[in-house]
Length: 311
Image 1 (cartoon, one colour):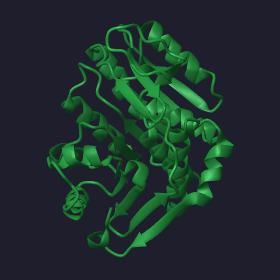
Image 2 (cartoon, rainbow, N blue to C red; image 1 turned 180 degrees about the vertical axis):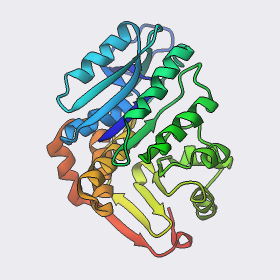
Image 3 (cartoon, rainbow, N blue to C red; image 1 turned 90 degrees about the horizontal axis):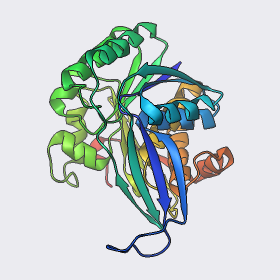
Image 4 (cartoon, helix red, strand yellow; image 1 turned 60 degrees about the vertical axis):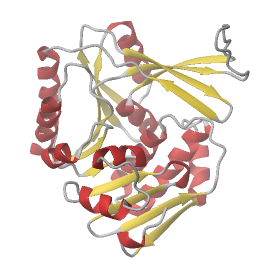
């Protein structure tokens, strides 16, 4: 079973605007959409599109939490495990305008020790056959020490642990030692505390691979890089007109993990992950036919050594 864990779920409110924004006057949206969100939830929703079951573990509360739960329960292949909290889930704003987007994310409300204990108890259901995607930001009140404890509880069950969060540092990575991390270039630079990775990507990935078995590095429009201790692969796709880049990394991770769990093929998994990211960028990752149409447009190249990797 694939488990997604979302520590800080949200309701994303998407506004589509065609006219130039006015700084003082009221701006009118052409359309508005509400969507259950949070990195782990995004992954479960995409896995459902791929007809792959998942269990979504999420901290939920208030009317926004009820909305998130209702949207997830509409999906046949998502089993919702609700960790109830007293506070409301956060609400984020996503502004889409032609080929650009703007995100404003709320921080969320603090949780108490009761919520933490219930979350930790959920790890008891895990087995060595399970995959856990621990994604997104930490909700206030859930500390780095709590995060380390949660990761170690997952690892103690011998489940596969994939981590996708901006808060990663080398010291934290050393303590949790996940099986996979999925940063983008910006997040990798934060992790390594470097302003630029253009000339030090090889050294950076080598450093990161000391504390994780594999890295799926998202490069946005330039594709992705996958590397572990045995192989380095460069993933590219044909150029597309991106309408929504928010959540493309989640689509990449979900497509990769879902296909790998199904086929045990690294190449097929990377192609599916890239195809899901492309479909999401085009604005419709819920259309399975669109996702499949991108598969022939994905190229995966074997890199003999990380030293040969060029972006």
